[in-house]
Length: 241
Image (cartoon, rainbow, N blue to C red; front, side, top):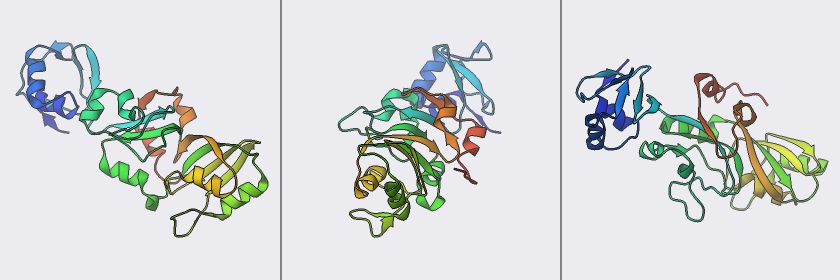
């Protein structure tokens, strides 16, 4: 349980500088429980707080945890170079709150992407030391064979990597699609592993992180949602595949 002044609440939620937030309050833009609040200095309980800013309904969130169905041709970078950045398809408040992608997907890779402003969460989900499995569906140029599956499971040697890298799980879906489960998250890892196994990845989609499945979130490409406690629990061990 904590109390903050209204201008600080608005600032922490990404609505702007403290000065700008005080201007919003003075202009009568903030309503709580149907009442317009113009007093900046009264402490307000943040637990369970709901409010509106210019009639936009908001819920106070100490930290943000978001799942996004990343479309193609979007960069997972705060400073994109060749394509729009992922924050461009999210609310402006997220940028001001320093929300960041949890790991990265290549600009042409689609699927489940987590985003947060919680540094500890980002580290836990990104670090290979925590063994959070990521599930990908790869479309291959050449047909999927038993030999290809065996090589990916046994491990392949990639340039600039000290040892071999192997899939945790690899399954054939059909002649040109396979499901591959990784824990490392190396640069272009799925694409490079397929190339090292004498095939080629023509499309890649991340369908699952931990036990959180994109299909169960029912997000169209470009759509996002806040994660609730039950969904966040799916990102913690034990993991099943």
